[in-house]
Image (cartoon, rainbow, N blue to C red; front, side):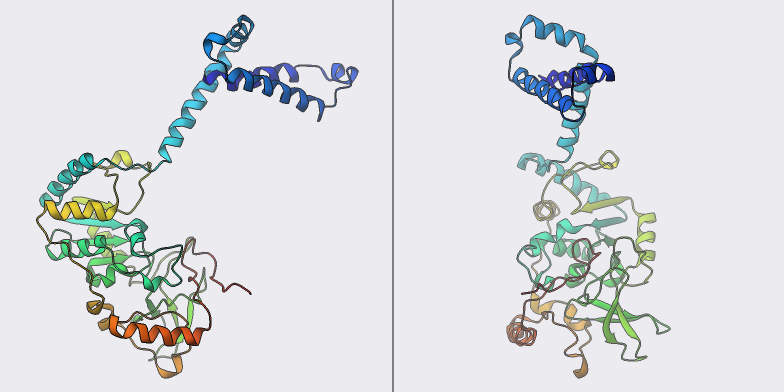
Length: 368
């Protein structure tokens, strides 16, 4: 049934072969008449398209034979479109196939001498509802984040390279030296004026006022009084900060790696699929849960009261209290009180920072 698309091409070829003089003599308007004729032909094509091969007339069969080259070309084009469409579809392995692949993965993890994990946005999406969240500090480390930290503690993973800005690897307990956050961390602002890069880890998203090529957060360094900047690397920018990007650590880990596990990339086809020894089509939490079972390891549970960010953070000074309108991360017992106070100061809901989404435009509050 793929041949129908070619009929329009055949008819159109006949139309454009008419001489300009004949079109003038017949008073055919070039813009209106030809398009009208072509539209009529398309209508006939659509009628033919609904016919089965047995219902085609002799004239229709002869017409197809005359356009055989075009028919073959259209078949090839349709085949390519179908392949491309399939590549854009998200695929999930059935439960048995998923278990089979995870067993192969567990064997690779056990045998690895230097394993590196690369992570993308897919490992974080279950940690918060993108469509409903008003502040990404509401997100918490997922089962996948916690499993990665456990694998590191068991010396099965040597380094983690992430393109996520959400700081959830840090909050899951993964050590700074074992982590490269190539696109920055939404909780970290730095002073680049000090001779040694000075970091300030906060309990809120520091990117409220920042966007592409505009990284000043509005707060000042406690030592040199220089303006602090966020650590986010937007699309089109080059990340030059030593931390939290840690490019040196990522490069060293890649050179030593004998196994690289990519998590949270895509369930669709990618151009690099053929380079992978194993591709698993499954949700990250499902895959990591099965992997931990195969490795006889307990799946750790995130405990907000023990979130390491509380011990690493620098508190705001009194004069900085009004420098942001983000919700604070706080232990369960005090978080409700702090966030209620924060909301009363805001007078409106928070907006997403400039790094969220494309990262090329600053979040703004909607006008009433």
